[in-house]
Length: 96
Picture (tube, rainbow, N blue to C red):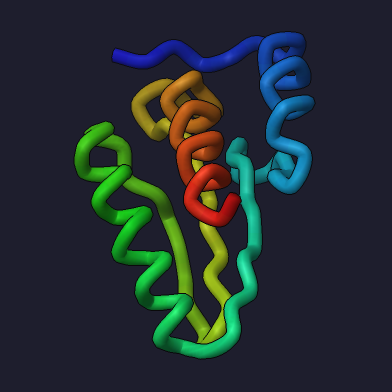
């Protein structure tokens, strides 16, 4: 079972995930991605799904045409864990 990050650990992790924002009420990190069109957005979601599946860690997300919003939190830990920050870093690498 994953362990929830302390506030200090969370702050350190977020320094390397500059585009992700911590949502206090959701106890999650969130990022919105924009693409040229729906096809590019859906392709990105497919690549994220493969990463998430291999990590056995699945995001909460939504898609509206060319926008994808991803929220990461470890429900079993009651908030943000290394599983979330690790997956966020891998997602960031997908878009360069």
